[in-house]
Length: 426
Image (tube, rainbow, N blue to C red):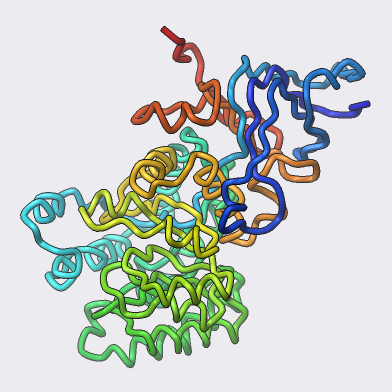
């Protein structure tokens, strides 16, 4: 008997979810549980029962039980976006014309644009402005089904403004329904004032920024942009090893633009995840598989920059757990829609709908150390749930370019509801 629940979601046409508390690679990534004609019961924000509707005959709802009719639609776990640059000031729409003329990302950076332009604007912004900008982005993410996201600093690039960015992330996590997971990324670029003295900037990162961030509990992870002309392999290794000493878990922007060995470095330093990986080598992929390093792939960046797409199929076949993220930022992936990323992964990475679902739920949650609480619809997990305006999993990959989310539930509470414009079959 199901009893003492304060929320019941009934009339679920198809429930689709991965299962478990750890990232899935290889064939396991495509194994999900499908339950037709399902229900979910919730108490105090936690899932208490999941099953087929014929088990509901013994359910005795109290007068305080909220009933949600899923309308015969698809239900999945809330989506997890494990790589965003959420906190910044100023968009960079003027760079689009440069990209269309063939100017490369690193060349824009050398011209003082790119990350460095955003750094200038973010340094001038107040804490309140950064929080306001972040709230707008999180509202948009939530409407597209994202219930948990990671957020990196990295547009401050000095102690004061990196701390300001991380405080903004902390406040966003407190103020917004979306759970926001903080990552310190002081090694996002070398700021203008240290362009001729990178060693001194690295010293600032490891001797001042990392200890302060760790001491004040402002981040769980440390990320580095390991790239030719930014932070080289040994520089990245040094920063991440120092971060580990202070209790920050390593992550790494790896092999995004050139194959310099970032994937292998991720495995060697015990990084929880390596991200981008557009030009990861076979050797690097095998090293990640052996180390169980999660690949966080960002097809939106490849799409927007007109670059190659990461070899997701090779990674999956080698046993690397693959997660997907928006890489939301003002320069190389200005989108909050994880649905678009799911579509791109299916069409460009040739990932199956089942593999993609795992990538944006369980594997994504594992890449930010949240897989024991979110990422699946199972008893004991947090009730982060999306009801789609779709009959089955295939439909949300088939019908692209629109928002197919109908209802978002976070910790057992409805936090977004699309009213009056559900799409009907023709």
